Amino acid sequence: MAKSFQGFRSLIENSPDAVSLIDKRGEILYGSASTSKVFGYHPEEILGRNCLELIHPEDRDRSSQALQDVLAKPPGPRQWDARVRCKDGRYSWVESTLSNLLFEYEVQAIVMRQRDINARKAAEEERQRQAEQLLHSKLRMEEFAYTAAHDLREPLRAISMCTAMLVQRTEMDEKGKQMAKFIVDGAARMSILIDDLLFFASTGTHEALQCVDLRHAVEQATLNLAPAIEESGGVVTVDPLPIARGNEIHLVRLFQNLIGNAVKYRGEEPLEIRVTARPHGPGWVVRIEDNGIGIAAEHQTRVFMPFVRLFDRNVPGTGLGLAVCKNIVEGMGGTMWVESEPGAGSAFCFTIVAAEGLPQPPAYKLSHL
Ligand code: ADP
Image (tube, rainbow, N blue to C red; front, side, top):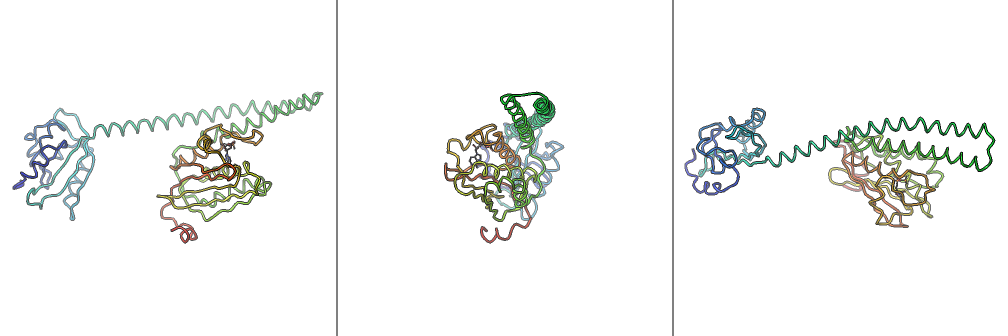
């Protein structure tokens, strides 16, 4: 037992944490007064007992390892969470911190400080439960969206086909033909909306991420948009882009939506689109910049909401493109925002986690690191 720890004792006696002194086998040599508050034991009741005895069987190996670690050379303070049996038989979650003071003349023991963390554990469990519940309802929503989309497509196809046949087989005046065209166009728009809704419902789940070459994803997106880009006369410049952690199909869709929007919402100037990336925390900020009509400050948060459209209804779109982008980015653990000024263009930015251990484009290293 420690030879003299009177000074030390006065320091710990009033601590709200239970403080014990143990030897290198874990035997309890001293327990502070608050042991009774935290565990219900009078300090004397635990003297001579091994602290590992009181630990929940599932947490015992971890606790024994912590004791070994604190005895190792060089010793360092060691902290871990474990359940400890209280006097009334129930287990209580505590955060334990061990400090090796065996060679301190005043103490000559290992100091174990134990703090009640039941409230924190309950909050963690509640968060976990809510996350599981959310995932469960998201999966159910996805299933529902697939079924609904499938069931809606069939009658839509029938409406389009029958209207086209009606126009062919019956005598119709110009007004009638125009109305028939409205029906067919409406059915086509609804079909696009169903596809977008379906994609929206399938994004955002934290799925397995792979290493994706962002440059490749941008190339794929511009290839898909080639006719529209060509028709606009726009120029897309792509700076060196990193390899990041994401979902390739979703990333192609993300770039496609953003570059496609830059084309749709272009201004009077010849269209210029630039895709860049710069290091940011454990990853990158990717930026898709255009010189289009821009977005007023008061709309810059709203545009990411489903079905929000700001301009001319004649520009094709469902108002789901940016909502899909935001869902995709958040599903990969990132955030998304827009920097814009009306008339001066927009820059849509998102963060993405780096693919660790993979070589990044050398040009990037030269200019940014
Ligand atoms: P959609 O293009 O189908 O309308 P989005 O969700 O992609 O839907 O975009 C929402 C709205 O945000 C658009 O209707 C448009 O008003 C605005 N917007 C999106 N991208 C740009 C852009 N690059 N420049 C200006 N406005 C944009």
